[in-house]
Length: 257
Image (cartoon, rainbow, N blue to C red; front, side):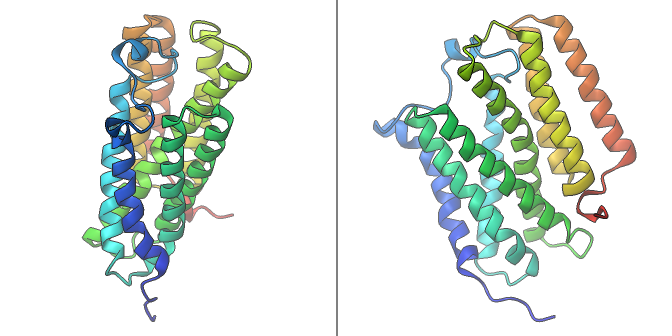
């Protein structure tokens, strides 16, 4: 099979990856507000939200994205040709979302951008998963990390953004409807994860990112807001989902339509 030429979209991944690293530094130069919460703001997070330290996973995702972008600059592998368009879309959405958060703009607009990022991440993960088992290389490995971890983390990010939007639109304070909002968040996150296992990806990096996010939710419930019963129930649900994934595996993109 003839290998595709290096496309403009592949070339674009590198500047997108670099800008993703640079945008969070803008507040240091007086541009926009810092995305990260202060210590006080972190303690006031909604119960279903992980502590701020758990969002440091973005540094790993951005690093893997940049590694994939570097591979894309010289590789004519059909894998990078397939995943480049949705990865580029996800990267642009990530940049826009960060700028919107720094500018403290509409929560609705930010959520719509995040939904676009979520869809792009899932498309990229599925396209990579379609090639799983067809050979390996350092470039393919870093692409697996980038697409898998991005999709896994965006699974939780979508759930958190949706619950945050619901709280904003209906005037529900972080201390209100704790059980209902936690259940709503977990319903979205677990539902999307099960869909991903069965239709999108079998990547272990998806599982790692998703489990990391759920662990953050559990720790926030147990330590920061001291909702011990919800923390235990969330732990049991997460354990069931993860053990089931490890025992039964995931069909991912290999699932029949």
